[in-house]
Amino acid sequence: MTQSQRVAVNHALESVMNAKSLVNLARYQKEPQKLISMILRIGTDLNEVETRLQTLKGRV
Image 1: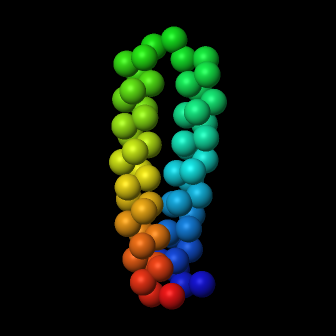
Image 2 (image 1 turned 120 degrees about the vertical axis):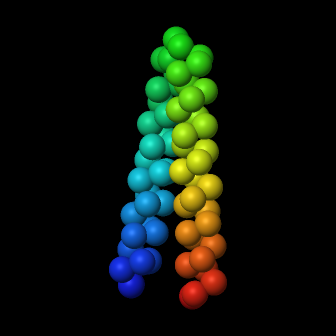
């Protein structure tokens, strides 16, 4: 695996773990505005992950 592939996979894993943490937090969150802000940040991360994975897919 190349360095850029490792970086993309690590970034994807980190984003998935962040999304899972957000889901767990949502179960107990009392501040909807804060939760919405966090969801939007995760959405941005997931868009970047999707782009990186599509690029990797094209190389394989």
